[in-house]
Structures are given as structure tokens and as C-alpha cells.
Image 1: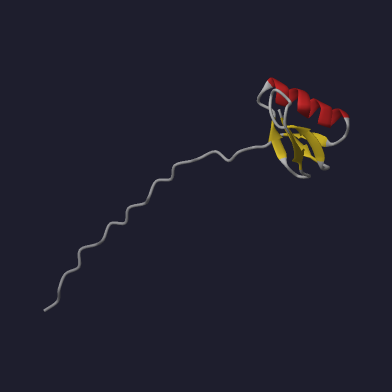
Image 2: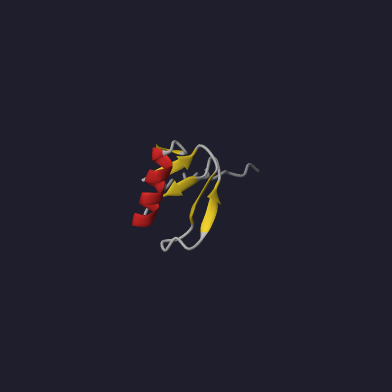
Length: 76
């Protein structure tokens, strides 16, 4: 789950909760661990964040076009 902060808020900075940090407006937080999911849910419940879906662009390989040069004949 990913959330986007809609207001500044203080919250835990680590799993043990012994450090805090300021989560700034427009920050996107990837809630990829249990403690982050819990923190994110608190932000959502208090209208401090909204859940977002972030699409990452897919990488595509492009083929380079090869240009064949025509042989030129010399006049003379």
C-alpha cells in the first residue's frame, strides 16, 4: 500500500517507535512493512493521508534502425 500525505504530521521513524520524524505534505510513503502499514492506517483514519496507486513506467527496449548506405558509382 502506498499513501500520499495531505498534511504535515509526526510519526514513528522506525519499527520500535523510539524515533519520530515529520512526514511532509505530498510525501509518498511505501507501506511495505507491518509497522508502516499500521502507521499509514493511522494517517488515513485521521485524514492526514490518502491511499494512492503509483504506476511506474514499464521499460521497453527499442531496436535501432539500421540504415543501409547505397554504393555510389564514380563518374569519370
